[in-house]
Image 1: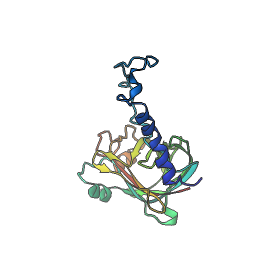
Image 2 (image 1 turned 45 degrees about the vertical axis):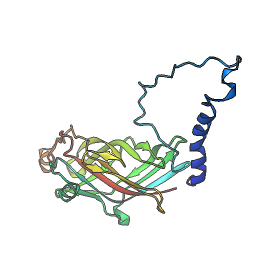
Image 3 (image 1 turned 60 degrees about the vertical axis):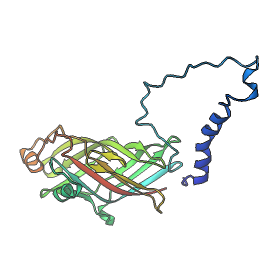
Image 4 (image 1 turned 180 degrees about the vertical axis):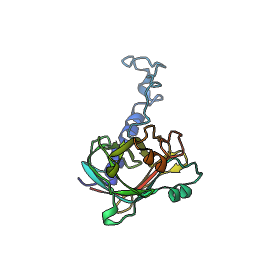
Length: 234
């Protein structure tokens, strides 16, 4: 459950490079040996492989980790240009207080892919309406020494109206339209900022009151904003 030591990660990462260097000595004296097969120009075709969602380095944690939010916001159907404008127009998801934090417990595989075992959101107030956010199917993603992603369905439940709506998020510490994420994995504890400025909300609530107050549906990419700054611990 400890974070992997940096030297161990560095040594593992250099093995493929070292092996490649040992196998490409084209000017060596053994190149003309009759026992060696004739060289060819054929290379393996990997052009159809999609590695965009594949981990690109070693996992940050060995077995499991916990996430605790420090700050975050959600803005729906806001055609603004900057993060500051979106945060001001949106709803605060977390402010770092003990009773206002989002928490995630997760297990992580050797390739850095992770799945949540528990997800909890505090209640939020949206346009004077108290709502609860749920993650009915859990969250999953990638957590390596270079980046973090988090994807899943979020369901917003308005209990007093017995109403709800759902949407998918695909948050990243990299670029998402007008939002840019961040990692600070050298800190103690490590921190990350996950963002998504590309998701849409296709399904509206049943209540016209909710749809009017929250401006649902919100189907134009770039007008919905999600940001969450988190601390990570093992």
